[in-house]
Structures are given as structure tokens and as C-alpha cells.
Amino acid sequence: MGCFISLVLLLAVVLTAPRNNAYAAEFGEAPMLAEMVANGKLPPAAERLPKTPMIVTPTDKLGQYGGTWMMAQNSERDHALLIRTIGYEPLLRWTPQWTDTVPNVALSMQANSDATEFVFRLRPGMRWSDGAPFTAEDISFWYDDILRNPAFGNATPEWLTAGGNPVHVEKIDETTVAFRFDTPYGLFPTFLARPEGVEPVSYPAHFLRPLLPKYNRHADADAQKLGFKDWKDRFLSVLGTPGTIDDPSRWMNPQVPTLNGWCLTGTYGKDDPLVAVRNPFYWKIDPGGRQLPYIDRVSFDLVGSKDEAGDTAITGRVNMQERHIGRRVDEILAANSNLQSFTLIESDMNILTLSLNLNDRDPVLRDIFQNKEFRVALSHAIDRDSIIGRFVPGALPHQAAPRPESPLYHTVLARQFITYDPVLAASHLANAGLTRKDDEGFLLRPDGKRLSFTIDTEGASRFEMLSAVIDYWRDVGLDVTARDLSRDVFVDMREKNNHHASAWGGDGGLDAMVLPINYLPVSSESSWYATGWAQWYSDPKNPDAVEPPAEVIRQLELYNQLKATADAEKQNKLMRDILDISANQFYVMGIALPPNRKGLVAKNFKNVPKVIPAAWSYATPAPTNPSQYYLESQ
Image (cartoon, rainbow, N blue to C red; front, side, top):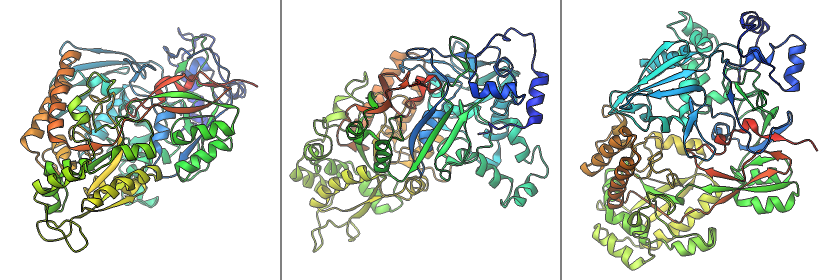
């Protein structure tokens, strides 16, 4: 992404960089960059690094330069792999142990006493991957011209709001920026360390201003010459939808400058392999003063499925990866003596969560789905022990609830309605008013139609497990069809509230406060059991918003209180109150606790921790600092 910079810009960098400053020390650099410096194609490392680079302490020892990190990437909607490996550079980041947040892009952060203002000091002299300065002006541009731009609608995500009002961002000077909220927001630093926290530092003003009419009166004409409808159409094609990282567009335009350690040289979904090369202006060093990353290139082989990812690993084209290959680790290890495993501490709370759309467009189905008796019936109709024996032997039956290791473990939410009892399931169906059946033995809706609906998932292994679940539902008279959709189609249907039910993984096992999407409807992107309620939480005026019932509104009020406080004891108390309501509502059901998983790493691939937390909110394995991974010479 924007690594290949023009000679004119490079010369400008050289001519304007201070010569006798405090950071003009002897910095080490990769041989490939030293050669470019010697040829006059790149400024010396001391002139590329900020005055205060971030020092990354290696996991085990100082590394060697060179080599290629090889992975397998799904060719459809797998930009999450890019985010988790080369795309996690927020203002604050998680520690490798997932115990706290630390400055990252920011040199420091200072919060006021009531957690309504957070002032970030940036690193003087820091640069984008094309050599242009990165300053508070870039964050100000993101806020003034992107987040608040009416052309993009409501681009402010929920995590950047407090008390129902969006953040206010002010540039204090070139290296200082303040984030202010109308009400206390003690959880803000925690949310900023999530993968979504890269948004404020993902919009290079110098590159993007020419795309906007505010700065270029020919923006529409320029866009139309390139085949776009208008400037907005062009902008969305380049950077994707503002306010969300769940859009692959920005990974399809390698010319966009970035702060990441490696920059793409090709287009995601098109180039195979997709290759990223080291960013010559990356702003991190090791304790010996050598510029990171150690590894020269990252290469992604595009595959069509998780099975193909496993095949890619078996043939030796993966040297460090945890995503996509979990089910075949032992098989891959048996075929490759140069590979070994590392442990992933599972944070997900379920191998398969099942949720009905409580805001279904069909009013009859909506009434049925909103009846808790119906949801309880579906849960009792599932033989979890049989499914566990078939797919995850030894796992513990578990509903959609925080893991037992979590201080927020909720016994009722985790264990209620979990026994397999078809007779009891039929009794709950009767309590829901569903007793009439057609000639084939399927239940009828109150309007006389057969009670039919679809439940969607993505991925062959998940679909296989879901198929086993719906066999039990069909046994109690429900005409349910499982569908294995491409991820693009799956997500698009939920964005449009065009779905009946969903089957997915179980976020929020150890990070229930940070990722509570299965416990209350806070995210229209992920709380698929009630997207309309989630829209209401984000913006009651949204035309797609649906006002929730009183008990759900109470949950959302409690969550706002939780977000406001920085007191851990108060946060836990409020979250337990929220989970009490979740247990009473029973929005989502689950099958079993996922066991810990394994990742793969080559024996000469160093500085990868032996144990890594596994979670989306942690962006596994990014907080372990991939820039300090290295390949040991054979």
C-alpha cells in the first residue's frame, strides 16, 4: 500500500529532513533498504524514522533480516487475515499478553479525571509509507472530512460514541490531538485497542484530499474519467465505507499510503500470491536500534476454502499461520517435519451459535421468533452430546455465554435449556401456540402456512455441524433449511436485514465487555439476532431502526453506564446485570465450548510466542508484534 514512492517525493524527504537532530543516531536497516540508500533511491534510516521510534522488545531474541512469511488466504472476504497480520496499527495496542493497552502510533495518551477527554501525543517525524509526514492533520482530516462528511451518512461507529453522541476530535498542534466525549467514556482506550481502532489513522490526508470536492473542484469529473459515477463512488472504491474496517476495498488499492510494517504490492482477491513488502518508513525499531520489520515480504496464497488452506500448508507453502488451518494441524504436522505447533488460548464461547432474527421482515415469523418459548423449544430439541461426539469430542455443552475461565461466567446463561428432551421441546412449542401440523408432519404457523425458515452460515465445517442441528429441529416438526453462503452474500443479507436465522462462531467468551454482541444488540454489523434493535441503539432516527422492548432498552442503558466508567469493579457489576437480562431473554443459543487450538510455525520462524490469545478483539496474532518475527538462516 503506497510503498513505492516517487523520486521527487523521496528527494523532498531527503532535503527537508533535519540533519543534526537528537535521533540522527546509527540505526540499522534491512540490506534491501541499505542498497536503496546507497543508490540514492531512499533516505538513510535516521531520516526515515520519527524522533521517538517505538521500541519493540522481541519475544525471545534480536532477529535477522530477510525472508518471506507465507500464509494461505481465502480468496473471498478474508481481509480479516490482513488486518490480523499486517494491518493492526492503532493509536493504542494490546500488550502481547492481552492484559493492558500501551501507546502504539501514539507516543503517549493522557485522560482527564472524568474520562471525557483523551489527549494523544504523536511521534514527531513519523511518516506514511510513501514518505509524506504523518501528523495530527491526518487525524483531523479523518474526523472533519470523512467522519462528519454528510455525503457518507452516519459514518460514526458505535464505539466512537458516548451517551448517544459522537466523539469530538480537535487538532491541538502538529503532534497533539484530543478526543472528547460529552459523557464519561472509561472504556474508550480499550475499544481503541481493538482492530477497529485503526480507523482514525487510516486516512492519509495528502493522498485523499484530491478525491474530495472540498479540495478539488474537478473531483467529480476526475472520477467520471476513470469510469466512476461521481467522486463518492470513486472514494468508496479506494477506501471503502468510512466507519468500518469490514470492507475489503482499502486492501484492493495498493497505492494508498499506510502506517503498516508491510505494504501490499498487488490487489487482494486478484493477485495470487498477494505479496506485501517492507515499509521503508516503518516507525518501529528493536532494542538494538535496527528498523523493523525483520522479514522482507509477506506472501498470501489465495485458496477457495479452509481445506485448500490445509492443502497449501501440507505442500510447504505456509510457515506461520493460525487462521483456517486449525482442524488439520495434526495432519499438516505429520506431513512436514520442519513445522511445529503453538497454542492458541481460545476466547470464543462457542463452536456454533444459533440465532433467530427477532426483527424478521415477515411479521408472522417475527412474532414466533420473539416468543421465548419457541427459542427454548429449539434449544431442548438439540442433542448436544451427539453433536459434540461427532465434531468436537470431549468438549463441554455450553450455551452462548462467557467462558468458565471468565470472571463474568454466568451459570444460568451458560447451562439453561441445554438438555436434550424432544418431549419437553414439544411442550414449549405448544406453549408458543404451535400445535397444528400439515400432512407431512410439519408445524403450521398461525396463518396456516407451513412453519419454514432458512438458517445461514459460511464454511464447509460449520455447515456440516449446522446440518446436524437442523436434523433435530426437523424431528420436532420445523421445516428448516441450512444454507452455506459465501461470506460476501452472508454479510450483505444481514446488512439488509434480509435473513431468518444465523449460525456462526461465538465471540465474547473472555472479552464479554469488549465484544458483547451476543448478549445485547449493540452492533448492527454483528448482533444478527436483532439488527433493527442494534440500529436503534446506534441511531434511533435511522430508517432501519426498530425500537426494542423495555427490557432490551434497560440492557442498553446499563451498557452505556458500563462504557462511561473506568472502574473495573463497577464495570463487572454492570456487565453481570446485563448478563442477568440476557439469561432471561435467551437471545442466542449455543452448542459447546471450543477447546484450545493450535497454530503452525516453521522451526526456523522465530519470536512467535508459544502461547497466544485467540480472539477477534485481540486481532490474533497482531499484538504479539509480527514486525519482530524473523526467519533464522539455515
